[in-house]
Length: 413
Image (cartoon, rainbow, N blue to C red; front, side):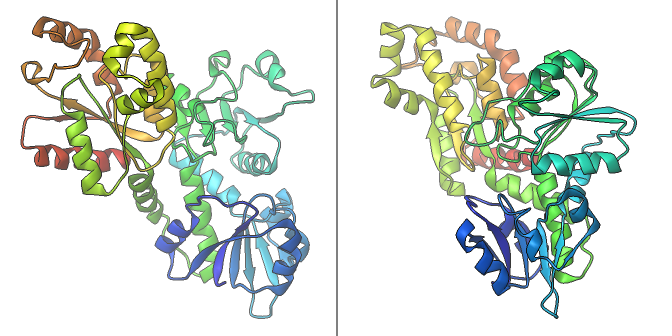
């Protein structure tokens, strides 16, 4: 192996994609079992490697030299083999964390910061916050003096909150480690998780108007710094933005919302064909789940039961990556649906004149007056939920082009 990432269970990693955009070398994923770690490290059959869970501490004895950051944190995430065969261990996570906060405009100087979690990533965050001159750094864990109950009772005056736990990470999207409503002094929230793009914690913080930082910029910045160690050259930090945007374009879902009969299914199918992305229709998923048609669900169990099924389906499909998702007209009615759709996607509101909306087989669109009433009751929710708006009044191919252009632009933000 020339360069690559080692860990026990790597799953789907963005690292090869990121490194391929950073430098001209071959980068591979290399799962290593605990019993094979010793033989792998002593063989030194690589030029350089990144190290992830659970080996960031375990590789230290194999390193002949450690950088100051690696010594301080006692964790290594980048190893370079010198021409002599010696191994030098670095930690680029601290740099990545600091870059993530700076890019988000988050300052911790003189502030009280709370870190959720006491594992290896917490040590990274602690070192970074010290370098950024935080006044007080409190580490919250599940046990001990500074536990989660103490967070609310003793540290509700925290101004910066950092999550280093896996709570809210795929596939457990929608979970949050804390309720920030109980932390009234917060001005900033950072979460090192990058899948989903926006965790429930980040979404809650954004709703409150706080500054937020998610984990993808940290991942890219630490990879760039590792690539500099691998190649011995300085890489322009401005490349980060392009890499982040490209990853978002590929991994975020394109979610279509809008009135019943506005053309979401037609445009969604065409978008899937145009992009070679999987198409998920939440109404179809509800039908599969219930074993009956939507009119039958409304007639037999009522709208509230239908909405429960809808919420269940939207939560599940929103955890996907790189999909085209079409939703029912009322998908935006529940706050939890709006948060789910926005956690890993960009939301396109498809608009069509009310008198052109299809009404057949739609329980809540039985006539023009009903349609107008429906639009008036939902208009603000549609507008506030959407990341961008496309009018479906042209040839479908034009609507598809506009939807894709809007998605790519929205993905860059």
